[in-house]
Length: 490
Ligand code: MSP
Image (cartoon, rainbow, N blue to C red; front, top):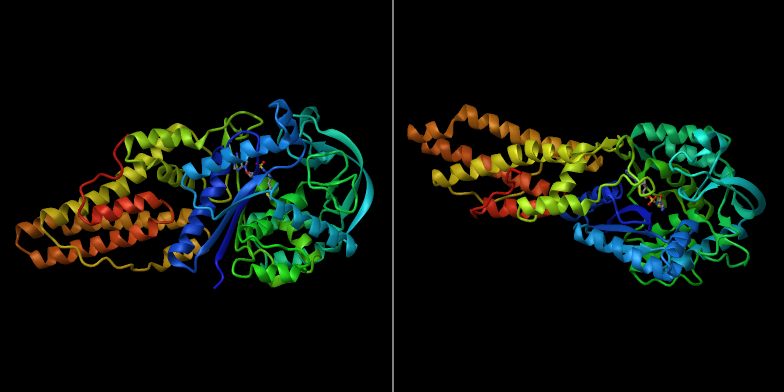
């Protein structure tokens, strides 16, 4: 049976992961855990994007060779994700040999099918964004839209990809939701981009960037980020299974990984949408990949802002996840990771921007985790103990709405459904007044109600597992009679 295949962007290596990066990885982690818990299993891929000018400049600044620098930095990323409890199945580095071989295979195929051609090119390039920018996109002072730097003029011979040949096919795929772009507003934006004549053939190699994958048929060129970066989604699966692609066709390669391929969910930020919703499927089509083997859903996230601007390593306004986790670990029994997951999923509904501050984080913790989840669990388990009511066998009752929300990748809504369930239980306690049933000797009635609530909590516990895996264990212990408080007040 095919596993649910979920990917995150691969991250540039300068600096360590901040909350903006953590967000995509958290969504991917929740969806992977959801499909492991309730579905046919999952394959969760993340990694690092290690080539390009920005990385080689950073290596130089640190007096390291690019290889030593990327070894060191990718370790930092991997360790950060491990410490944050992310359950990725494979960590792909673009310096991986399987990845290099795949990218070289891709560019060779694209040349053979005349999907790439050599072209003399003059354009503005922002190293911070690792991206070409047009005059019209520049901010005041000629600055890059997302970075505080002036793009450089580059004049080079580059290989260009014939995107124009594929735009119409891509439009149909997006319109018909064969490649589903969510939220809807991003689907419309993608369709608008397809109308824009500026979105045309684009450069896939660079002439003067030595830290990159060599183009096998032209020693003056290295691959430029987007073939190199995007094909991590395929090489990551191949590398995880040590598959040697030599002498295989594109079809044969995909057949080797059919228990995982195609991606079901690709979580991406809005700044890299065009590359994923347009360029990526176009590359795959050019390789002869059939429509049923294209990525299924692109989930486009907004940005975490800080001080009104995108949280960014280059701007320097970042919040580092482990700093927040550490604080919550001190007041809870090591639930810092879970609490941060919960809070960012609540603060930023998928698609919107979010502005996060420490006060907000504590506010959400107190009002939802302490007052609603924590309080309801303690109350009911407390009553069951006090009135000596035995728990029934905990069975996993499914709640259709929750599963529907998760199928729509709407984790925010899934949490809402759990919170609603919690408040219904709260209201029921107030109307049924178990303490009075006890006083008046209506023990059967008392037992029936508390057992029902315990069942509800057992279900909430199951449903919370993908969202807060450590809390899940605590809730189970609590329901099994252990004395503990899950979420103490700050
Ligand atoms: N390496 C490329 C992506 C290649 S994917 C095949 C890249 N790297 S990045 O490190 O600059 O950004 C990676 C992801 O992090 C992007 O999706 C970007 O949107 C996301 N974020 C970076 N800062 C962010 C916020 N402040 N908030 C939310 N996400 C943000 O682009």
